[in-house]
Structure formats: structure tokens, C-alpha cells
Image (cartoon, rainbow over the protein chains, first blue to last red):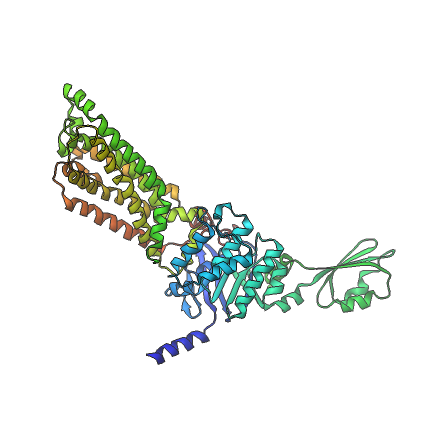
Length: 312
Length: 287
């Protein structure tokens, strides 16, 4: 008997944290998610990117068995998301994109309710500790909390059952930068203890700092799965150079990895891919008054991927 | 310790039904009993039309406490509390869905049927409190006026009426789980209750409806017989069985449906938007 349990445990441990195989969901004629094949390893922090309606929330809802797939299948920690959904949810913490709490309950009552629904398998001191860390008053009713504090309570609830997998739909939306940092420190700590973090985001800086890999969805299709470093390398940045007097002809800089060029009288605007060093060297002979660089926004990166996809 | 955590929550969520309905039930019971002597006097002087007598059912007439209670309290209070029961029943899942709180609930390691069953128990408790609050109202009234009817008969009449409320709460839960919006579920359940009541009352007068009347839950909930000591337990059991069947159907309907979340009618809107064709924008609610 122990051997069987040990084998099951070993098998479980060898499974991916999240795996989808041809996962598809349609609403009527419209395909919200189209044959998603994705594998996320244990302990990974994975960012799921895409515009509204791309299928990010649909994916999360399929993993939690809120929605049922039209075809294909998904598993979390080796448990089938349809047949073994209770086991999936027992090991999962979830923060909805549109978080709605019971307005009439205080933080403590909310924690008690969800502790009860997890058969009491929650360390009561853990909630208190997290609340203190987040500077969240659990004696207040949810309806009287600010949006940021409600979001903090949502994060706390997602972490309550010491989940092995966290499914977070835009976890830091509505939080001020300071609290965003605290939340991400908490999530990173969870990841260090082996928790897999799967989250959707629109904030590039967040993705940059926290993720190891990202998946990009467009109109229900997975357009790319890349390490963040690759994504950043391809995404490019804006460079604006102001010259003393008239700007030199843009053709001078094309060899420096410049993609797009806009020219005004004394200013040139570049879209730069890769390192900035070749451009700096190319600028050396000129009298540069000012040089500003700015990371391309996530939307621009996504746009870049979408355009690439559309061309195919 | 953590047993029935959702039932307790459903009871707390239905406190408007329990407290509001309870106050109404208590106040009406007390008022009816206190007014009984003067009403009996007035009615003894007049020859009641048949339809008025028929409302008293087996209990007979306005001149006895049993007939009077059957006609007044056990007619007005249940139909009012049915509305409370419908509101509480639709709040169970449709209310959570329209409020968006269903997401956090469904993310817990529990089966969906457990949500339905526990909520049904909580709502049943709230509805029971509301109706049974009439008993102390009657007992209090009996201290001031001559109103001779035994407590056992009163309890029996309550037990004959309670399954009726459970049945409509269960119907509301089923409609809430099966229909796209809570408003729709309230409207359909209320329309069903009113229609059943009208058929039931007209059926007492009109031969054409006398058989159809037997299909309404009101026929099976006969407080008037219980008030004269002829409580037919099996009738209550039939109603309870139907209510349990409706809860089971609600669990099946809830188990099978998609929870698109976020807003009222989410899945319905998505489905309709999807049916309009591919040229439209991607599914917004599904993000």
C-alpha cells in the first residue's frame, strides 16, 4: 500500500505544474481559446500576456473547472481539471481578475469562511502574519475597504491554503507601487518554496522583474512562449537623440541596429533592438545635447508579436 | 467544527427573510388573534358567501379559531413568505454570480452540489424561523383573548405549511441555477407561485379547475386540516420530497453550467455574442 502511495507521489512530483493539451473553448461560433498547448514546470513564475479578450481568463477558468472545455484537456499537478477538480483546487490559490468579496463580512470573517471551506487545513497564524506584512486591517468589513486593500485581502485569500500553484489574474492591479512590491516579495517567497505562480499582467515592469517565462495569447491562440530575456531582447526600446544644430541623416545609424527612424530638425527618434552600445558608438562623432531611452511598453511588444503573427 | 459552513453563511445571508419575515409573521399572528373576538362577532351577524367559507377549508368557518386562522394567517402569511423564500432561493447561486462573489467560492476545494445542498439547508432554516415566529405571536395573543386552539394543532399547521415554503425556495434555487439572470429567476418563480395560488383558490370554487388544483403545491399543504387535529403527514412528506427533488435538479443544473463570472448574465451574453458571428470583437468577459 505504501509502495502504491509512494509511486503515486513520485508520479505526481514528475508531473508539470500546469499542462494543457489542445485546450479549446468556444462560445457559440466564437473560439475564445484555440488548441492551447502549454507546459509550466513546478516552481516556475510564468506570465500570461495578451489584450482583453485574448483568452487569459478563459484559460484560468478552465483550469479551475469554472468553464468546461469544448475539446482538449488540462491538468494541474497531474490532476485532471475536469475529473479531479476538487484535488486541483485543494492545491491551488486563485485571485480573480474582477475580485468581488462578501461586502458584509470582515477580513477575519472572510478568512474564517474560506478556512472552513478548506476543511480547516489552514494555519490561523499565517493569515495574521500575512495581514501584518500587507498592513491590512482584518477587522474591517470588506465593503469599507479601499480597492487596494480589497486586492490585498484577495492576495491573502489566494495564499491562505499554502497552495502549490497560484493562479493570479492581474494580481497587483489597483495597488500602489509600494504595496505592489510587498505583494511580489510575498509571491517570490512562495515561489522559492516551490510554489508555481501563473499570472496575467499588463504591467511590463512587473513581468520583467518577476517572470522567468511568458506566454503571449492573441485571439485565443498562443502566439509565443519565451523566456523574458528573449522577449526583452526582441521588444526594442525607444531612443530619442537631440543634437546641437541639425540632426545628421538617419541612414548613418542603420548599421547600429536601429529599426525605425523619425526625423525632426534637431531630433532623431529610433526604435532600437538589442544593445545600445553600437548606437552610442555611431553617435560619438556628433554633438549630442540629450539622449533619452525608454523601454517599449508591453502593448508595443504585444503589437510587435501580433503583427508578426498576422504576416504569417 | 467546519461542518455546514456554507449553510451557516446562507442562513446569515437570508437574515432579511428570517428577521423581516419573522417580524411579519409574529405581528400578523398577534394581530389576527387579538382581533378574533370582534371579527367573529361581525361575521356571526352575516351570512358568509360560499367562496369565503371555502377558504377556511376543512376548518369550516370564521366562527372558530381554526377556521379563522386557516382563512387569515395560513392564507396571507405563507403566500407572503413564499416571496421571501424565492428571493432567498435565487440569492443562493444566481445572487452570488451577479455579485461576482461566486468566483472565490468555486475556487475552494468543494463540489458544486455541496454549495447547493448547504445553501438549501441554510435557506430552509431562515424560512422556518420566519414562519415559526408566528407561533409565539399566537401564544401571546391567547393570553389576552379567548382563542381556544391547542399548541399541538398550531405546530401541526406550521409543519403542514413549511414544506410549501421549502418547495418554492427550492424552485427558486433551481431557476437561479438554470436561468441566465437572477431577475429572470425571481420573475419566473414568482409568476409560478401566483399562478399556482390562483389555480388553487379558484379550484375550490370551480369544478373545471378542481382536478388541476391538485397539481399545485398549495393543495398538498393543508393547514386547515391540521388545525382541526387531522394533520396528514404524508402530504407534507410529498411536498418535502418534491422540494428535495428540486434541490437535486438545482445541483445538477449548477454542476453542468459554465461560470463565466464577473457580471450578471455573463455566460449568456458570451454565448449570444458568440452566436452573432466571428466578425465581432473577441469575448470580452472571458478576458
